Amino acid sequence: MSKQRVLSGVQPTGNLHLGNYLGAIRNWIEIQQEYDSFFCVVDLHAITVPQDTKVLASNTLTTAAMYLACGIDLEYSTIFVQSHVAAHSELTWLFNCITPLNWLERMIQFKEKAVKQGENVSVGLLDYPVLMAADILLYDADKVPVGEDQKQHLELTRDIAIRINDKFGNKKEPVLKLPDPLIRKQGARVMSLTDGTRKMSKSDPSELSRITLLDSAEEIKRKIKKCKTDPVKGLEFDNPERPECHNLLSLYQLLSGKTQEEVAVECQDMGWGQFKPLLTETTISALQPIQEKYQSIMDDRTYLDSVLRDGAAKASEVADATLARVKSTLGFLTSL
Ligand code: ATP
Ligand code: MG
Image 1 (spheres, rainbow, N blue to C red):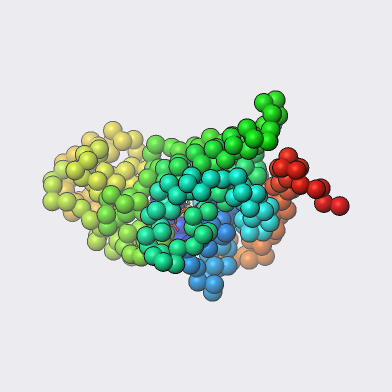
Image 2: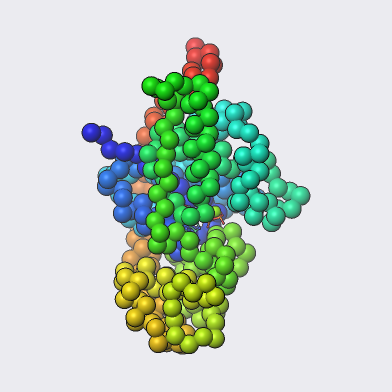
């Protein structure tokens, strides 16, 4: 039996942070051997909000290098850049023409990011989930490992696939495969260091809100020292009055590899003055091997280029076949 397929991606909108790692990439690594996995750097998604044209390409390259540094193995997985596979844009257009506008207006991410854009909010930001549906459905993906914030977009992807199957397919032969989200409970929503009620994000203007995978030991120390806490003595999980406490303990748990019970007992009598250095040391040691591997990958640009060239070729083969199938179903004249 052939393996099921997985697709996921991260936007090249800045350095990857602990939320991206614990909510998404770490899960990719864990499951990659079981699946035929495709991981893309979603640069077309990045431009749904303004990007500096001078850094978009280098952010795309560093994000791909980070996938490898975190442990994506090319024996099981394909790494590619979204804009290198033209089918993503083309299928998005086809989907645009069957997606009701009000489905998109309900999306939480659109509402949140649109506020920040004011009058300059682009049609692309509204259309973000349709592009994401194209990314996933092009690869007939069975599973999509993402953080909690992408759950609503996954539901929309399924709705688009169901609509196309109902309108244009038949029961025996659906046009598109329905994907399932793969959202792990632990780490699915890492919160900001400066506000435990908001998710950690690359696009948060405050550097202090996130720890990136490339932060130096000094930066990690400074950010944890300054992070928001509370005046209560004794640390605990799951107290809704103490979102920062839950978030920081969860980070410690995930980065140390301990169980929640172990951490709960270890930290129940601690104050912040004792816990912060512990979290700092644990974070530095967890990131050190990733940072070393990242450096060696970035030192070999020829290798990285070849990974992305091969990845684009492999991805195009799968994506172009799906695009041709959808176009034929929709009644387009086959290219002559
Ligand atoms: P941006 O602010 O530019 O949207 P981002 O930090 O939200 O960046 P994305 O590139 O949008 O990162 O998301 C990449 C992956 O990381 C997705 O699977 C997303 O669900 C996951 N992710 C993002 N932020 C978090 C977080 N705080 N906790 C857990 N997972 C997250
Ligand atoms: Mg995001």
